Length: 211
Image (cartoon, rainbow, N blue to C red; front, side, top):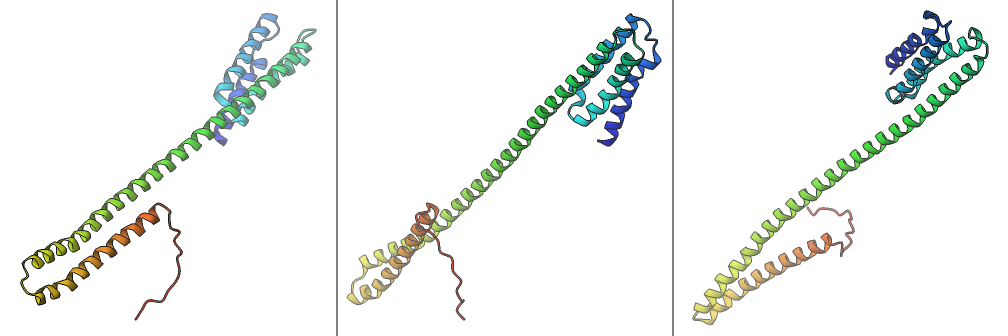
C-alpha cells in the first residue's frame, strides 16, 4: 500500500507540474491544461478510489498547483477559475469517497457470502458424514437382528421335530434368550431413533467403571 500511494502521489505531482513546465500565458493553453488535468483527476476516481488515501494523494498535487497558478499568476478574473478548480477537486474527492464506500461494501458482502458458502459446504459435509454413519449403523444393526431371528427359526424347526417333552423343555430357554436378545436390540434401536428425533433429552453424568 505504501509504495502504491507514493507512486500515485509522484504521478499526481508530475501532472500538477504542467503549470510550471508549460507556458500558461495564453488562454488557450491554460484552458487546455485545465481540462486535461480535470480529466486526469476524474478518470483516476475509478482507478485509485479502491484506496481512498491513494486517490487523495494523487489529486491534491494535480489540482493545487493549478489553483495556485490561477490565484497568483493568472489573468484578471482568474480567481474564479481557481475557486472552480478547488470545487472540482472537492467534488472528485467526494465521489472517490462514495466509490470507495461502494467498493468496500461490495467486498464485504462478497467475503460474507464466501464465508456463508464455506459454512454451508461444511454443514453439508457434516450431514453427509452423519448420513453415512447412520447407514453403517443400520447395516450393523440389521446384521445383529438377523442373528437372534435366525436362531429362533432354527429353534422353532427343532421344536417341530422334537418328540419328547424333555427335548422341548430344553429348547424353550433358548427361545426365550433369543426373544430377549431380539427385544433388547429393538429397544436400543428405538432409543437411538428417539435421540435422533430429539424426542428424548440426554442427561450425561459421570459414573465409576466397575472393577
